[in-house]
Structures are given as C-alpha cells and as structure tokens.
Image (cartoon, rainbow, N blue to C red; front, top):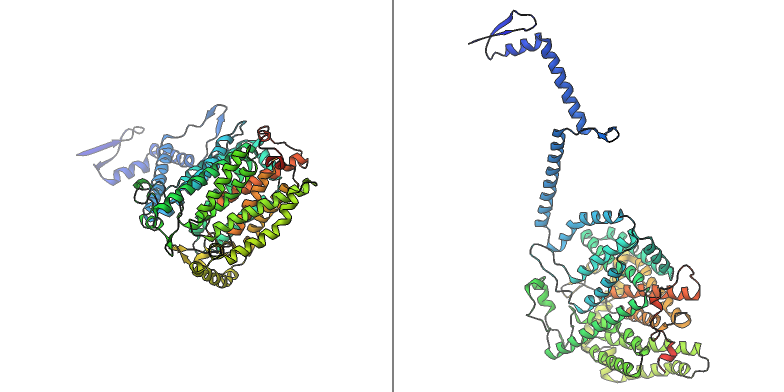
Length: 589
C-alpha cells in the first residue's frame, strides 16, 4: 500500500513514502509550517498548565475568579488522597507496634488541632461555666469513691478511666471559657489577685516540670506524666479558683467530698469484716484493665495477722491519707452546724472515722487525724482569744494546749498499743529502715541533677527503689527533689507554705464572715504536708490542688470585703446562706 501526501498549500505531491515509515513524520514536521505552529501552540498550553499548578488564584475582576483547570483540581485531589493514605498507614503501623499505655501519643496532633480551633473561636457573651463547675464537683466524688484501677477497656483502644472522662471535658470547657469570654478572664484575673504569690509559684512549678523532661531517661513517659499532671493538678486548680468564688459551690464540693469519704469508710468496714476486697471476682470484663496488675491489687493484705483495709484504693496507705484529709471538713461541719443535733451527728461521724483510721493499719492516718484536730481547735481558740477580750473559752483552751500535748505524748509513749499505732514497733521496723536507707542513697542521685531533676515520676527509677511491683519511695520530700531538683522542691513546698500562711492570716484576722472555711483549708494543707513526710503516693493530689484553688477564692473574698480589692465584689450567691455565715463564736454557743 502506498500513501501520497499532498501539501494543501502547494498542490503537487511532496513525497510518496511507505506507510509507517518514520521519515514520513519527520518530513512533515520539518517542511510544514503549520505543524511547527501547532507544536508551539501546544507548548504554550503545557507551560500555562504547569504555571497554573503553582500559581495562586488571582482575582481578575470583582466577583470574577480565574477558573481552576479541571486537571489541576483532579491532581490536587489525588495528592490529598495519597497524603491521607500515607498518614493512615503510618498511624496504623504505630498503633499496631506501640503498647496500649502509649497509644494516647497518637492523639497529640488531634489535641493540638482542637486547641487551635478553641483559640480561634469568636468571643461570646455566655460560656458554660456552670457545666464546668458541675464537672469539677463530679470529679471530686469520682476521684474519691471510684476505684481507679477499674476503667473502660474497649477492644483495640487504650483503657479510659472515669477520672479522665470527667477531666477531659472540664479542661476543654476551661479553655473555651478562657478563649471566648472576656468577663471570665477578668474574673479569673481578679481572683488570682487574692494571693498572687501562690499562682506565680504554681506557674514556676509547671515550668520546672516541663524543663525536667530534658533530664529524663524516658522522655515519652515523662511527657505523659507531665500532661497528666497539668490536667489533674493545674486545670483543677484554676477551675476551683473560679468555681469557688461562689461560696455555695464551695460548700457543695465539701459535702460531696464528705459523702464520698463516708461511703468508702463504710466499704472499708465491710471489707475488714470480709477480710478481702468486696468486688474481687465480680468485676465485669469491660472494666478489667490488666488482669495481672489487678490480681495483685485485689489481693488481701495482712500485717502480722491483721487485715489491712484499702476500700476503693489499690493500697492501704492512700486510703488512710484521704480519710485523714477529710477530717478538717468534718470539723468544719461540727463547728458550723445549725443546731445541736446536727453537731452531735457530725461528732459521731468523727468518732466513726477514727475507727476507720485503724483499719488500714497505718500510722499516717492516725497522725493526720490527730494533727487536724489539734491544729483546727488551737487556731479556733486563738482567734476567739484575739477577738473577744473578755471571753474565757479562748484563753482556757489555748493555755491548756501545752499540758494536753504533754499528756498525749506521755500516753503515746507509755501505752504499748498507742505507741505501736503512732510511733511504730516491730510491725514497722522494715519500713523505718527502708526510709533511712532511701534518705542516704538519694543524696547522690539528687546532686546528679540538682536544678531540673530527672523528670516527672522518674526519680524512684533513678534511685532503683521498687515497691508494689514498680518504682516507689516512702518520702514525698525525696520524691519531689528527685523529680524536679532542689529548685522544684523549693517552689512546690513554697507554694503550699504560702497557702498555709494565707489561710492562717484570713482565719485569724480576716474579714471573711465564715472564717471556718479558711481554717478548714489551713488544716487540710497542714495535714497534707505532715502526711507527705512518710507517704509518696499521688492518688489524692487533685484534692490538694483543689484546696489551693479554694484558698485563692477565700483570700480574694476576704480582700474584697476588707477593701484591698475594689475592682469586683462577691456575687450575691456567695453572700447567701446567713445560717452558715454566722460568727464562729455564736456557731458553737
């Protein structure tokens, strides 16, 4: 077959070539001006298309935009699908390789995106402060009355504790309120002026916690512990600082705390009668986190034949601690009761709690219980002496205190059972020797990183002390120094001591009509400081940071009433309940 190709412009044939010969195409492109023009046009189109891929859209005329080429849109869509698939493959790979306790790290990009969205939210006139405060109240009850070792365990997901189910939305609402409402920010700022040293020391402590991650041997674990502390400590402090501006909200939190502790006290009594955890063998699979760890937690503990009750806690010592920390709240209800019957009821509950203190077979519970009564009554009597010059009640109790203390010490040292419960004996020899060894060994470990420490909860591992199957210490003073260095130690305990001093001044000379609240906060912080000399567990630290937030709110109300802060005044709700706001001298008459 032969093909004759003619030039339409010239007429006669230019070539007669075999069909399919490469020379046919070459001759056409070389000799035909029309073909050259066509190549140039297609070259311009390709160049324009490539420029359109990287050139941003420009407005040509008002309300008219350059139309995006269809192929460009398809390529961009394909690129997005490829990136999403690669990201999904990476997440799937790490989700399959990481242990369950580290899966939450994969959610950090989503958390950052959520924080960015919260930050760009527009201002609003109303924010969910009531819901945020209600979540705080619910968290107080759950953190005390629900076993933390029982959590939701869904297939393929990390276990979710009920504390986190309340803390996560509470923190989110706190960020939303701070981002979208100027009045909320103003109220928080004014409340912080009640005792500015406390929140400044807290900010410095958070900074030290962050910097200490650099000294951790396990940065991933240190980061996780740091984030948990900000949610359970710092966020709780600021939510309490705002919520407790209303005195009624403060009283609700105290009642919930009291009822929760009363509940776990009753559980401990039944547990001591059963000589075992009540729900052992009856936990549904949905709430079983780690069978090996849970079996050790639910195991009955005995000391020289006596059962050690732990109620909803994993160990007896944190249970004894929380029962000691609720003692100032009971004393508040005793001294602020409306009538004699209510006061007698709370006194009976106080004696019941004294019996519950003996069930964990722990010295720290009885020491905290006794110290709370001594501090509360001594400060109350001293205030009566200062305010009522002609009253004999205040001076009588205050001057009799040295004699009562000498008598108590004599009874403790002379009576064998009391000495065993308060000072210790053959049952506590091992614990006492362990604490002495820890003090000696920890000095060199602290001096290895005295500025920033070894990271959140990394100190016991550095020291090499193992207790209950994990790194542990018996002294929280050493724990703080190991984790955050000597600087963090000074900041942390300085924050607590300033809170103690602030509440002492308000309870003695303050203008707050219900000074028993300040006295309750003072006694709680003092009891916590005393307990932490022999206990390092952090199960109940949220309660202390909530108490510090409460102290800030009490100090703010006192300064507002005294005229030191004239920017704002307490809400009408915070000034209600005249029966609870009576002078303390009249409340016990």
